[in-house]
Length: 368
Image (cartoon, rainbow, N blue to C red; front, side, top):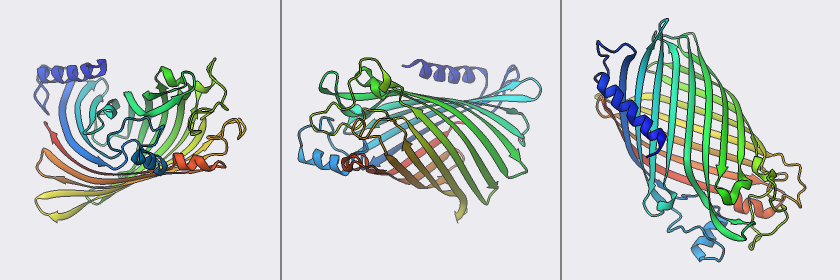
């Protein structure tokens, strides 16, 4: 059990020992209330590791050099999410809300793709339900995530490429009037790979702004924009081989300077619908678009996979959530994601373009 997970369960035990769900004990000086929710769901994913069409053809043909040990390139992914929440009293009519989220994802056929995520959100705000401001501090990590097998130039062999990701965010939010929220965002992210692929290591800074307009019992519209700047710190390591070295298939996609600038746009529209009097239903559509420009100073001969390359990546997710009871929600949704690459080197887009489609269902129980 990881340290973060132990902390999460400790929070649950402390909360259970101090008070009952949703109400404060008379002896509780700092704890105002707590809650716990659990979500169990599953997704059918038609492209589990985001293979290009050329890679899918190579996998189906059993071509030499396709080293990733996939059983099938599509799969069923089961997900468990546990989310405890506590609210603490602070002096001067302020409160601190802590929400820890643990997620475990397991694949049915390709179990080496399994991963976990941990998220800790802290919200500082006035006690009043009509608070004018809020500050969110967020820490997120994926301890180990499998990307695929890549050719390692140092050992001249294929190895599994895995990375560990950490994100640190601060986001103040301000209420303007009754229905409008404005949020500012600053984030720092590190992505560090296993010892075979430290050339891929990167660090990213992000600044952003968002707005949410909510008409209660009518609709909600949210929009956000982020400017991301990623520095491929690993490519400068001492002792790394030259970019021009060849892998056996001539399909080396990652070596070189993968530093990039990126514009990221997101939008969400949701509204309740009255299909059944006893079952509240919300429908929503979420979309995200990213324009990424690689900024290497290397020549096209030195770095053909990054020089002059532009990635356009987008996804859209329509979903429906039904409140089956006061404690139980059922969610159904579909996600379509694509990346399309423009480059002066023809084989780059053949390797980098991909499409993923997912169907998902999730059941959430709130223990409050």
